[in-house]
Image: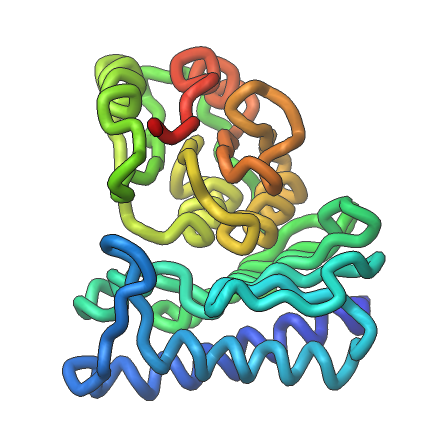
Length: 266
């Protein structure tokens, strides 16, 4: 039976998804703001974040919250901390590109405990709790059984900030592209992780993310039988924002190709 924390995260994600679905019908009328170069937000992001934070704070008023919009922090030194990306894939959303999601993760004493990612376009709800398996809607999900890198489909994300290491990324990209069956960049880290968990992708790597991008999805991959590390093979992905994950036999050759990438220039 789902814990109150998981039930609350699901409720908050579905409520935020309703806001996203409603606003997707009038996306051309939204006022768009730029936080930093090529990093956008609209009232949809802030409305969803307010809805999620209100729901979590109602049931767990003493828990910590770290959320994307406005770099929101509340009780961040609490034992239980929630990591919220109200709309992961905002640029996709603003262009009508149907690859975006609500991402809500929770840690307890620094360890991944709850993960919920909701894709409102496909009405797919991915969720997991520590040691309880991973699910999509009502069905158990597992990472793929792929064992040959030459037949694997790999996800990634492209650099986009001014100081990102474009040259270093392209070097790693080439190493993977030469040996894998295909590479995909869809623009939502949360969904990329869930697609690894459900076997749609065999592995995924990306650098310079934020904790709210990956907290929920990382647990879902782990509970689906995948491996998740930072790009040095350690467990520091939430802190440094660099992540590599996949089904075990594809993960190993992938991290050998992309490891140690991710430190911005300058």
